[in-house]
Image (cartoon, rainbow, N blue to C red; front, side, top):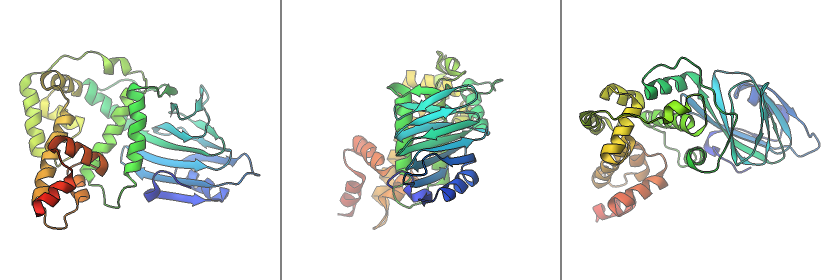
Length: 321
């Protein structure tokens, strides 16, 4: 069965007992039941751990039910095909490609024939740390997300697109992802969840924010210039600037017209160009992209051409002439 996370497959089976064992042992399920034993069963699952986030793929060839315990993480479900139902003791929501489901408590999931989905699990404590960095104060409440969010457009659509693209990127090539890039990807997915899915902190996160001083923006830029090889997280930006992350983002937008992460991307593209111009014969464009913080080589090539007017491979060819 074609799916996502093929390079990180945990199981591919037509044996319900095997998928039951994997769901319980690997994915923290409480139980698994095959509801249509007459139908041809085929299931596949894959998983990749970023640190604070875990991204997984699963598919079921026939109607199934899976129950999950209340854990120390929040689950976000992105249906790819088919449909189903997610039910907790308080709420229930239809699972479909046009909605994002949040299941932070003990949940029972019922899936129909041909169901496929990606699931993003995020550690609750990591989300609380992100909130503290964004708000400038440690939140006193636990975060609670809306059970169901229409994809539509805006943040929710971009969140879904990011997760699908992230999963697809993990199937490109076999090179190890550098640890700093892995940590950045981890936080980016958590931040997108905070802004894309309505929660009890949404009003505070989206409230207007006062600017910081111009020197703090320059200080962040100088730090990025010197530390672009490291993982650039909001906690580090807060430490460098002495201001809340939201204040830094607001001042960047107002004084530069873009955010600090866009500036980071520009610095890394310049670094990638220098590497492409000086790498020995046979140097891998993919390896250079990864070293400069770009996992998706197709996206890297597009950004590179927009910035420099030629593809990374063309830079290499022209240098070798």
